[in-house]
Image (cartoon, rainbow over all chains, first blue to last red; front, side, top):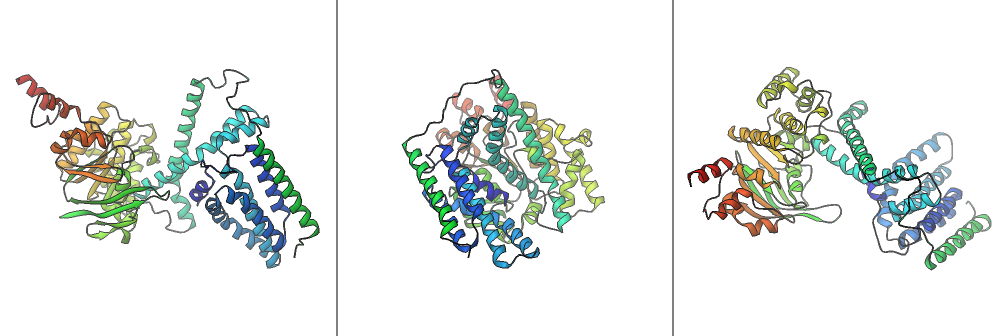
Amino acid sequence: MAHVLAEGLKFRHQDTPIHSLDPRIKLLMSVMLFSVALVSDGPYQLAVTFAAIAVPTTLARSLRRMGRVVVVSLTFAAFILVVNILVGYPLLKSLSITLRFIAIVAATSLFFVTTSPDELEYVMRWFRLPRDFVFAFVTAVRFVPVLMLDLTQIIDAQKSRGLELDKGGPIKRLRNLVPVLIPLIVNALIRSGELAEAMESRGYGAVKKPTSLHELRLWGRDYAALMITVGAWSGILFAFRYYIGVV
Amino acid sequence: MAIIEFDNVSFRQPSGVMALKDVSLSIEKGEVVAIVGGNGAGKTTLLKHLNGLLKPSSGSVKIFGRDTRDQSVAELSKKIGLVFQNSDHQLFSETAEAEVLFGLRNFGFSEEEAAKRANEVFSYFGLDGLRQRAPLTLSGGEKKRLCIAAVMAWNPEVLVLDEPTVGQDFPSKNRIFATVKQLVAARKTVIVVSHDLEFIWPLNARTVVMNRGQVVADGDPQRIFADGRLLEDAGLRQPQLVALSKLFGRDASFKDVNDASEWLANR
């Protein structure tokens, strides 16, 4: 399942109007959709929210990948639904909360499926976050697909030695993970050590304020997207407040 | 008798790439087969079909006459022992001994039988001195031999080695070569997947050349390795001993370094 999620969230270069936007605009778009999802309640508002998320996702030609992320979130969504029902919320209210969670996941994912790790780094630097923190965060994001590949290979190797991950009760299944997790962690530690040495060998940390090859700059299309996003966001919230009721 | 049969096997990866295209291959009991090809040729995809880690998108793979679709990976792995390229993906136990016992316990051997088999493989592969060592502290060559020993402990009918020489120094390569020869001498069915033709050539094994997911040549190593064009197209380089033989205008290539030096000394 983690593999499906990582595949869904993995950035792929695509030539679409959304991918080519400045990453700050994509972040703003995602944050605004997130806020709409957060306040939406009831079938009508949720329908509008999902439609609002679907528009940029379709323009980014990422509906299928977004679908994968949503499918993965369904497990957590089911958990949320059950907990809400158990604590005494009516079924419709519980369903509404669950759908809101899925909308939040989709809104957040939009930024990650359309933004490269490099762009993510530029945005974080633009927010003047500490350089070491930015580097560590972006490296972690970049490492996810590599770790997923490692995970697949380790599982294959251990299955070839007779390990049956899906057999046995919950305790046995947890125990079955040991031969997978130990090589995964050890490999990740070795790789991170090697990366640290390689970075230092190439001068990382030699100067306090390193120069940057890329600077973020807003173009005409970014201003247009900014206006459309802010306009749509205000319109939706206004409609939620005055026209589209909870039920 | 063919124990492994690939019948028009194609495999499409989730990304849509055809990793195998209409591969037909049959391997007999006791045969030694080298599967060679450049990066991305489909070698590893092919061998993952042997123990059911991958199932064909079309066509069929039969192991001992049974379709892999009808068997679990564990069932198939008991017959087909697969040693992966990266030893660090397999080793996790506190000691080399526990590493060998892991597979034996998974396959349901009694503690007594498992201990007996572990003793046998440690001695057979000359690893006795490493029994209590932590696998992760071993050298690359030792790790590789431990991985082979850990698989051979349950005595699978077929041993498959994926790129056994990657990251190995010369002495380690020699020891792995000696291990493979030892298994061949014991009439094991051995499949070696590699792009290291210098390692493959002295094995004198039936050679299968793969290129872009297809088998482009299958047969006598003398004939295949003499075809420089075929190898080059498959992203491979002719073994030096074969190139040297050609240089001297010999019909048959030198089998190994000893053969070459003997011939040169007598010349």
